[in-house]
Image (cartoon, rainbow, N blue to C red; front, side, top):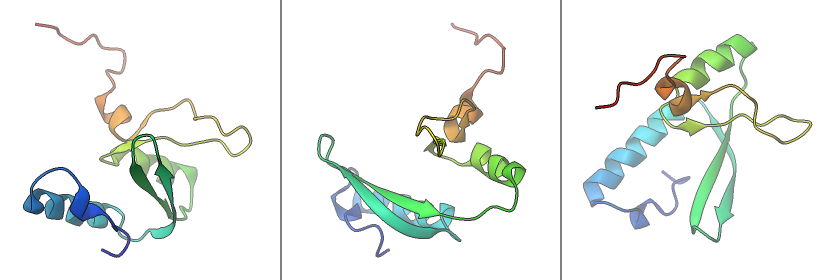
Amino acid sequence: MKNLKRIDEAVGSIEERRVAADRLLKDVDGWECTGNAYDPKSKTESLIFKRIFRTEAEWKTWARSFPYVLEEITEKTGRPKPYKLGLDYQNKTRGRKINEC
């Protein structure tokens, strides 16, 4: 848990924070923590992880099932790529209309 420096200041009970930290560590197992970033406006810290995939298809398969919000940035322009990943992919309607009650 050395990479989760301020998990004790997160919102929720101690047990909720432990469960969240354990889940995060399980989700990033096999990844290398290469850095962090801090947003002074929201006072949040983001961790930056790295992992090498053999093919783009392997990357997209993993990224579509990732249980968090995820965005891939292009190397040349720094803009987000047009396809959905993570929770955005799992929650998209795929052309179907959502039934509203």
